[in-house]
Image (cartoon, rainbow, N blue to C red; front, top):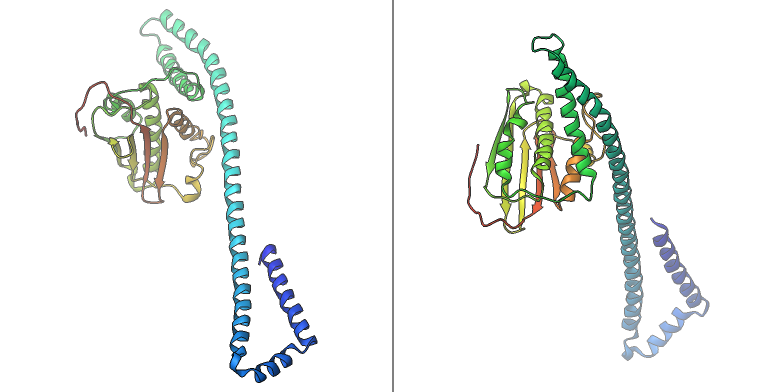
Length: 327
Protein backbone atom coordinates (compact mmCIF):
# COMPACT_ATOMS: atom_id res chain seq x y z
CA UNK A 1 0.00 0.00 0.00
CA UNK A 2 1.41 3.37 -1.02
CA UNK A 3 1.78 6.26 1.40
CA UNK A 4 -1.14 8.40 0.04
CA UNK A 5 -3.54 5.44 0.19
CA UNK A 6 -2.40 4.59 3.72
CA UNK A 7 -2.91 8.19 4.85
CA UNK A 8 -6.43 8.34 3.39
CA UNK A 9 -7.33 5.00 4.99
CA UNK A 10 -6.13 6.24 8.39
CA UNK A 11 -8.22 9.40 7.98
CA UNK A 12 -11.35 7.34 7.21
CA UNK A 13 -10.72 5.06 10.20
CA UNK A 14 -10.19 8.08 12.44
CA UNK A 15 -13.49 9.64 11.29
CA UNK A 16 -15.32 6.40 12.03
CA UNK A 17 -13.69 6.17 15.48
CA UNK A 18 -14.55 9.77 16.39
CA UNK A 19 -18.17 9.43 15.25
CA UNK A 20 -18.55 6.14 17.12
CA UNK A 21 -17.09 7.63 20.31
CA UNK A 22 -19.43 10.65 20.16
CA UNK A 23 -22.50 8.53 19.56
CA UNK A 24 -21.56 6.19 22.46
CA UNK A 25 -20.89 9.08 24.83
CA UNK A 26 -24.34 10.62 24.26
CA UNK A 27 -26.19 7.29 24.14
CA UNK A 28 -27.24 8.17 20.64
CA UNK A 29 -28.34 4.68 19.76
CA UNK A 30 -30.49 4.39 22.93
CA UNK A 31 -32.05 7.77 22.24
CA UNK A 32 -32.70 6.94 18.61
CA UNK A 33 -34.24 3.58 19.56
CA UNK A 34 -36.65 5.27 22.00
CA UNK A 35 -37.47 8.02 19.55
CA UNK A 36 -38.18 5.51 16.79
CA UNK A 37 -40.47 3.49 19.12
CA UNK A 38 -42.46 6.60 19.93
CA UNK A 39 -42.71 7.58 16.24
CA UNK A 40 -43.09 4.27 14.46
CA UNK A 41 -45.07 5.86 11.68
CA UNK A 42 -42.02 7.96 10.71
CA UNK A 43 -40.09 4.86 9.57
CA UNK A 44 -36.92 6.21 11.13
CA UNK A 45 -35.27 2.79 10.99
CA UNK A 46 -35.19 3.08 7.23
CA UNK A 47 -33.65 6.56 7.50
CA UNK A 48 -30.97 5.20 9.82
CA UNK A 49 -30.14 2.34 7.49
CA UNK A 50 -30.05 4.73 4.55
CA UNK A 51 -27.75 7.14 6.41
CA UNK A 52 -25.35 4.39 7.42
CA UNK A 53 -25.39 3.06 3.86
CA UNK A 54 -24.59 6.54 2.53
CA UNK A 55 -21.66 6.88 4.94
CA UNK A 56 -20.32 3.47 3.91
CA UNK A 57 -20.75 4.33 0.23
CA UNK A 58 -18.88 7.63 0.67
CA UNK A 59 -16.03 5.85 2.44
CA UNK A 60 -15.80 3.23 -0.31
CA UNK A 61 -15.82 5.96 -2.95
CA UNK A 62 -13.03 7.81 -1.12
CA UNK A 63 -10.97 4.63 -0.96
CA UNK A 64 -11.48 3.90 -4.66
CA UNK A 65 -10.63 7.48 -5.57
CA UNK A 66 -7.48 7.28 -3.47
CA UNK A 67 -6.40 4.10 -5.22
CA UNK A 68 -7.08 5.63 -8.65
CA UNK A 69 -5.03 8.67 -7.77
CA UNK A 70 -2.24 6.38 -6.63
CA UNK A 71 -2.36 4.49 -9.94
CA UNK A 72 -2.34 7.76 -11.90
CA UNK A 73 0.63 8.99 -9.87
CA UNK A 74 2.52 5.77 -10.60
CA UNK A 75 1.72 6.05 -14.32
CA UNK A 76 2.90 9.67 -14.39
CA UNK A 77 6.11 8.68 -12.60
CA UNK A 78 6.70 5.85 -15.07
CA UNK A 79 6.06 8.15 -18.04
CA UNK A 80 8.36 10.81 -16.62
CA UNK A 81 11.09 8.22 -16.04
CA UNK A 82 10.74 6.90 -19.60
CA UNK A 83 10.96 10.43 -21.04
CA UNK A 84 14.04 11.15 -18.95
CA UNK A 85 15.65 7.92 -20.13
CA UNK A 86 14.87 8.73 -23.77
CA UNK A 87 16.28 12.23 -23.35
CA UNK A 88 19.44 10.85 -21.73
CA UNK A 89 19.81 8.30 -24.52
CA UNK A 90 19.32 11.00 -27.15
CA UNK A 91 21.98 13.18 -25.55
CA UNK A 92 24.32 10.19 -25.28
CA UNK A 93 23.74 9.35 -28.94
CA UNK A 94 24.43 12.97 -29.90
CA UNK A 95 27.68 12.99 -27.96
CA UNK A 96 28.76 9.64 -29.41
CA UNK A 97 27.82 10.80 -32.89
CA UNK A 98 29.98 13.89 -32.49
CA UNK A 99 32.82 11.72 -31.20
CA UNK A 100 32.44 9.27 -34.09
CA UNK A 101 32.45 12.13 -36.59
CA UNK A 102 35.61 13.56 -35.04
CA UNK A 103 37.36 10.21 -35.13
CA UNK A 104 36.26 9.65 -38.72
CA UNK A 105 37.57 13.05 -39.75
CA UNK A 106 40.94 12.43 -38.06
CA UNK A 107 41.24 8.93 -39.53
CA UNK A 108 40.32 10.25 -42.96
CA UNK A 109 43.15 12.77 -42.73
CA UNK A 110 45.56 10.00 -41.72
CA UNK A 111 44.46 7.84 -44.66
CA UNK A 112 45.16 10.55 -47.21
CA UNK A 113 49.01 10.29 -47.14
CA UNK A 114 48.74 6.48 -47.13
CA UNK A 115 46.64 6.55 -50.28
CA UNK A 116 48.76 9.21 -51.99
CA UNK A 117 52.12 7.57 -51.27
CA UNK A 118 50.81 4.10 -52.15
CA UNK A 119 49.50 5.29 -55.52
CA UNK A 120 52.73 7.13 -56.27
CA UNK A 121 54.67 3.99 -55.42
CA UNK A 122 52.46 1.91 -57.71
CA UNK A 123 53.10 4.28 -60.59
CA UNK A 124 56.86 3.85 -60.14
CA UNK A 125 56.75 0.04 -60.11
CA UNK A 126 56.77 -2.00 -63.28
CA UNK A 127 53.87 -4.36 -64.00
CA UNK A 128 55.53 -7.57 -62.82
CA UNK A 129 57.10 -6.24 -59.64
CA UNK A 130 56.39 -8.54 -56.63
CA UNK A 131 55.49 -5.58 -54.43
CA UNK A 132 52.60 -4.47 -56.64
CA UNK A 133 49.94 -7.03 -55.48
CA UNK A 134 50.26 -6.29 -51.74
CA UNK A 135 50.49 -2.56 -52.43
CA UNK A 136 47.32 -2.71 -54.53
CA UNK A 137 45.55 -4.42 -51.63
CA UNK A 138 46.71 -1.61 -49.34
CA UNK A 139 45.19 0.96 -51.71
CA UNK A 140 41.96 -1.04 -52.01
CA UNK A 141 41.59 -1.38 -48.22
CA UNK A 142 42.37 2.31 -47.70
CA UNK A 143 39.75 3.29 -50.30
CA UNK A 144 37.10 1.17 -48.54
CA UNK A 145 38.02 2.67 -45.18
CA UNK A 146 37.84 6.18 -46.61
CA UNK A 147 34.39 5.46 -48.05
CA UNK A 148 33.17 4.20 -44.67
CA UNK A 149 34.53 7.25 -42.88
CA UNK A 150 32.79 9.44 -45.46
CA UNK A 151 29.52 7.73 -44.57
CA UNK A 152 30.04 8.55 -40.89
CA UNK A 153 30.76 12.18 -41.76
CA UNK A 154 27.66 12.44 -43.97
CA UNK A 155 25.52 11.02 -41.18
CA UNK A 156 26.83 13.60 -38.71
CA UNK A 157 26.58 16.76 -40.86
CA UNK A 158 23.33 18.66 -40.44
CA UNK A 159 24.27 21.27 -43.05
CA UNK A 160 25.03 18.85 -45.88
CA UNK A 161 23.18 19.44 -49.10
CA UNK A 162 19.86 17.62 -49.16
CA UNK A 163 18.97 15.38 -52.07
CA UNK A 164 16.98 12.34 -52.99
CA UNK A 165 16.41 9.67 -55.58
CA UNK A 166 13.20 9.36 -57.59
CA UNK A 167 13.47 5.63 -58.25
CA UNK A 168 14.74 3.74 -55.22
CA UNK A 169 14.30 0.37 -56.93
CA UNK A 170 16.61 1.40 -59.77
CA UNK A 171 19.31 2.53 -57.34
CA UNK A 172 19.04 -0.75 -55.43
CA UNK A 173 19.25 -2.79 -58.63
CA UNK A 174 22.27 -0.80 -59.83
CA UNK A 175 24.02 -1.50 -56.52
CA UNK A 176 23.15 -5.22 -56.42
CA UNK A 177 26.80 -6.20 -57.21
CA UNK A 178 27.95 -4.02 -54.28
CA UNK A 179 25.51 -5.75 -51.92
CA UNK A 180 26.30 -9.25 -53.22
CA UNK A 181 30.10 -8.95 -53.32
CA UNK A 182 30.80 -9.61 -49.61
CA UNK A 183 28.16 -12.35 -49.32
CA UNK A 184 28.91 -16.08 -49.46
CA UNK A 185 27.46 -18.04 -52.36
CA UNK A 186 24.91 -19.66 -50.01
CA UNK A 187 23.14 -16.31 -49.45
CA UNK A 188 21.09 -14.67 -52.20
CA UNK A 189 19.46 -11.25 -52.52
CA UNK A 190 15.95 -10.80 -53.88
CA UNK A 191 14.60 -7.34 -54.70
CA UNK A 192 10.91 -6.72 -55.41
CA UNK A 193 8.63 -3.75 -55.48
CA UNK A 194 7.36 -0.78 -57.39
CA UNK A 195 9.20 1.47 -59.79
CA UNK A 196 9.53 5.23 -59.32
CA UNK A 197 9.23 5.20 -55.55
CA UNK A 198 10.96 8.42 -54.39
CA UNK A 199 13.20 8.43 -51.32
CA UNK A 200 14.58 11.68 -49.79
CA UNK A 201 18.13 10.29 -49.57
CA UNK A 202 21.08 10.72 -51.92
CA UNK A 203 21.90 7.54 -53.83
CA UNK A 204 25.19 7.15 -51.92
CA UNK A 205 23.45 7.26 -48.53
CA UNK A 206 20.73 4.86 -49.71
CA UNK A 207 23.28 2.30 -50.88
CA UNK A 208 25.40 2.79 -47.75
CA UNK A 209 22.66 2.03 -45.24
CA UNK A 210 21.24 -0.84 -47.32
CA UNK A 211 24.73 -2.35 -47.42
CA UNK A 212 24.80 -2.23 -43.61
CA UNK A 213 21.40 -3.95 -43.34
CA UNK A 214 22.34 -6.60 -45.92
CA UNK A 215 25.63 -7.30 -44.13
CA UNK A 216 23.83 -7.69 -40.81
CA UNK A 217 21.31 -10.05 -42.39
CA UNK A 218 24.16 -12.14 -43.81
CA UNK A 219 25.76 -12.30 -40.35
CA UNK A 220 22.41 -13.41 -38.89
CA UNK A 221 22.37 -16.37 -41.30
CA UNK A 222 25.97 -17.33 -40.57
CA UNK A 223 25.35 -17.21 -36.81
CA UNK A 224 22.10 -19.18 -36.97
CA UNK A 225 23.73 -22.45 -38.04
CA UNK A 226 22.29 -24.76 -40.65
CA UNK A 227 25.02 -24.00 -43.18
CA UNK A 228 24.63 -20.23 -43.01
CA UNK A 229 22.52 -20.04 -46.17
CA UNK A 230 19.35 -18.13 -46.90
CA UNK A 231 17.67 -15.29 -48.75
CA UNK A 232 17.76 -11.57 -48.01
CA UNK A 233 14.65 -9.81 -49.31
CA UNK A 234 14.63 -6.10 -50.18
CA UNK A 235 11.30 -4.55 -51.11
CA UNK A 236 10.38 -1.06 -52.29
CA UNK A 237 6.76 0.05 -52.02
CA UNK A 238 4.41 2.96 -51.52
CA UNK A 239 1.99 3.25 -48.60
CA UNK A 240 -0.74 5.39 -50.14
CA UNK A 241 -2.74 5.69 -46.93
CA UNK A 242 0.19 7.04 -44.92
CA UNK A 243 1.70 8.87 -47.93
CA UNK A 244 5.04 7.16 -47.35
CA UNK A 245 7.75 5.44 -49.32
CA UNK A 246 8.72 2.18 -47.65
CA UNK A 247 11.91 0.10 -47.85
CA UNK A 248 11.91 -3.31 -46.21
CA UNK A 249 14.92 -5.55 -45.58
CA UNK A 250 14.02 -8.99 -44.28
CA UNK A 251 15.88 -12.19 -43.41
CA UNK A 252 15.11 -15.53 -41.78
CA UNK A 253 18.25 -15.64 -39.65
CA UNK A 254 18.76 -16.14 -35.95
CA UNK A 255 16.67 -13.12 -34.90
CA UNK A 256 17.22 -10.67 -32.05
CA UNK A 257 16.19 -10.96 -28.41
CA UNK A 258 13.84 -8.40 -26.82
CA UNK A 259 16.62 -7.01 -24.61
CA UNK A 260 18.93 -6.45 -27.59
CA UNK A 261 16.18 -4.96 -29.80
CA UNK A 262 15.89 -1.99 -27.46
CA UNK A 263 19.60 -1.22 -27.88
CA UNK A 264 20.27 -2.05 -31.53
CA UNK A 265 20.52 1.60 -32.61
CA UNK A 266 22.76 2.72 -29.74
CA UNK A 267 26.29 3.75 -30.77
CA UNK A 268 28.96 1.07 -30.23
CA UNK A 269 26.41 -1.57 -29.22
CA UNK A 270 26.88 -4.88 -31.03
CA UNK A 271 25.79 -8.47 -30.54
CA UNK A 272 28.80 -9.76 -32.45
CA UNK A 273 31.91 -11.20 -30.87
CA UNK A 274 34.79 -8.96 -29.88
CA UNK A 275 36.68 -7.77 -32.93
CA UNK A 276 33.89 -8.61 -35.41
CA UNK A 277 31.78 -5.47 -35.16
CA UNK A 278 32.10 -1.80 -34.21
CA UNK A 279 28.47 -1.19 -33.25
CA UNK A 280 28.27 1.89 -35.49
CA UNK A 281 26.46 0.45 -38.52
CA UNK A 282 22.87 0.66 -37.32
CA UNK A 283 23.61 3.87 -35.43
CA UNK A 284 24.68 5.48 -38.72
CA UNK A 285 21.65 4.02 -40.51
CA UNK A 286 19.30 5.49 -37.87
CA UNK A 287 21.03 8.87 -38.20
CA UNK A 288 20.66 8.92 -42.00
CA UNK A 289 17.00 7.92 -41.82
CA UNK A 290 16.19 10.46 -39.09
CA UNK A 291 17.89 13.30 -40.98
CA UNK A 292 15.78 12.48 -44.03
CA UNK A 293 12.62 12.78 -41.93
CA UNK A 294 11.95 9.05 -41.89
CA UNK A 295 11.70 6.37 -39.25
CA UNK A 296 13.02 2.85 -38.92
CA UNK A 297 11.07 0.03 -37.25
CA UNK A 298 12.67 -3.23 -36.17
CA UNK A 299 10.68 -6.45 -35.84
CA UNK A 300 12.45 -9.60 -34.74
CA UNK A 301 12.16 -12.69 -32.60
CA UNK A 302 14.85 -15.26 -31.77
CA UNK A 303 14.79 -18.00 -34.37
CA UNK A 304 12.26 -16.19 -36.60
CA UNK A 305 14.37 -13.72 -38.50
CA UNK A 306 14.48 -9.93 -38.59
CA UNK A 307 12.66 -7.23 -40.54
CA UNK A 308 13.76 -3.61 -40.88
CA UNK A 309 11.00 -1.32 -42.20
CA UNK A 310 12.20 2.14 -43.22
CA UNK A 311 9.49 4.71 -43.96
CA UNK A 312 10.02 8.11 -45.58
CA UNK A 313 7.55 10.88 -46.35
CA UNK A 314 6.56 10.42 -49.99
CA UNK A 315 8.13 13.09 -52.19
CA UNK A 316 6.70 14.43 -55.43
CA UNK A 317 7.84 12.63 -58.58
CA UNK A 318 8.85 14.24 -61.83
CA UNK A 319 5.82 13.20 -63.86
CA UNK A 320 6.84 9.53 -64.08
CA UNK A 321 4.69 6.61 -63.05
CA UNK A 322 4.56 2.89 -63.46
CA UNK A 323 5.04 -0.34 -61.65
CA UNK A 324 7.69 -2.95 -62.02
CA UNK A 325 9.18 -5.94 -60.30
CA UNK A 326 12.70 -7.23 -60.13
CA UNK A 327 13.78 -10.49 -58.63
